[in-house]
Image 1: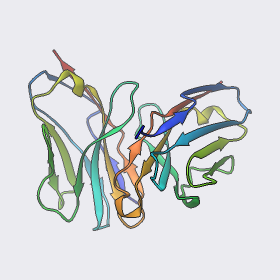
Image 2: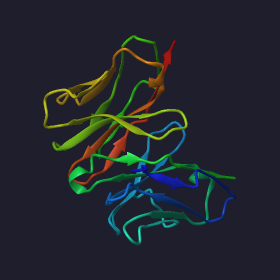
Image 3: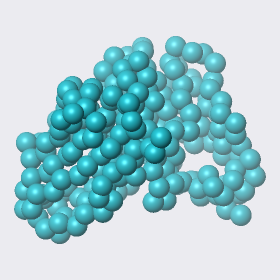
Length: 115
Length: 114
C-alpha cells in the first residue's frame, strides 16, 4: 500500500493555458475526492467519485474545471484557460467506500502557480 | 450550510507541555463526524483523531484527545506531552454523514518549541 500519489507535485503555468493533474488513490479504494487549498485556508471540497461515477460537484467547480475517473482507478483534474485565482494546492484523497467515507487518506497535493 | 471556525490562527507550546486547540462548528444536522487533521510543513495531511457525533465519550489517540461538547458545538483538541514533531497546521473538519460533504476550518499553526 503506497498511499495516495499525485502528479505533478508542482506546476507553473501561464494564464490562459490548460493544465491537467493526476491522482492515483490507494488500491481498492473506490471513493476519490478532489479539494482545493488556498494559502492560509483549509481545503475546500471540489468533487468526488464513487468508482467511475462523479457523484457530487461543488459550485466552486466552474465550467473550466473537469474531473474524470474513467476506469474507477486514477483520476484527472483539468483546468482550462487558467486564471491567477486558480493558483492553489489541489489535494486528492481516497476512501475505502461509502460505509467508510470518513476514512479519507490524502495525497501530497499538486501546487499550481498561474503567472 | 455547515461552517467550521478555528479562532486561533497560531499557537506555540514548549516541548513536553500541553496545548489545546479550539474549534466550533455550526450545523443543523444530527448525524455527522468531526475530525482533526495535521498537515506538517510540505507534507501531506494525516488524520489525528475522529469523533462520531452520536458518541458521548470523547475520542482519544495516545497523546491526543478531544473535548466534544455537542450542545455547544465545540470540538477542541488537546495535545499532551507536546513533541517537536507535532509542529504543523492543524485543521478541524466536519463531515455530514448523509452527503459526505467535508468542511474544514482555516487551520491553526502550532509550533512546538524546544
